[in-house]
Length: 273
Image (tube, rainbow, N blue to C red; front, side, top):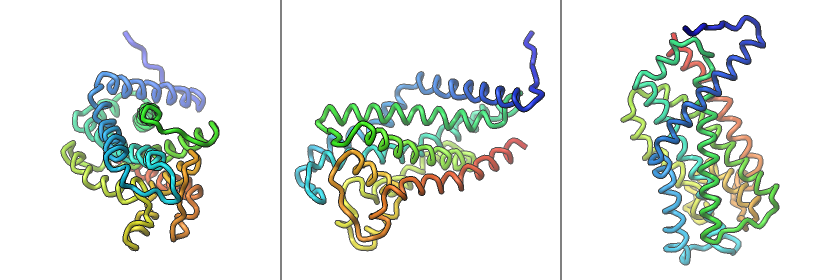
């Protein structure tokens, strides 16, 4: 017979919340580990993009400021992978809720924050693994960063910061959507967010209004900042946003977190009651 111990003081509640969050994280990672087809599917598009844009169209692409197109492309693909992770988070949250898993967790004597924290930690672990695979793929095809190890680590940190913000955007949207089918419909909506940016070409080469939209894209700030940290020749744009990528690469994710963490928590509490 299992005895349930109810935490009495603040320290015990915090310890219990951390233990429950670790359990939920391990549960999500176990599900991911037993579904390798999902991992292969999420990496397929960026990997194919490396081959397609790097080798098929690469010779026809012009790099602003000169340089190799592969060095310009890879940071863009890193950022795009972080953005596409948004759909993975949404799909996982919607699927758990649709199958009644979330309701079962809510009925159990576990910390109310463990479900959301566990989701965010497991998705960040998965995002880190995605980045490691993509970095390895980039090295295999000849990409090299020119900066120091600390600068490269800072670039990876900015990419993960963007992903962390999008995890909470995904949790909120996943709690709002009604079915897994509706989450599948989000790919066409996320695609412009990933493509209307400086992923493949500089916004300066786009039509004027579209270039401004691309430079205002939070992903563009992160990609531009990581390019500079990786030592890739980067171009300056025609707006204030393009000239301050480091500032915006931090401010955009922080703003998203400030908006969507409270929204996700509120929506979760509303669902719980």
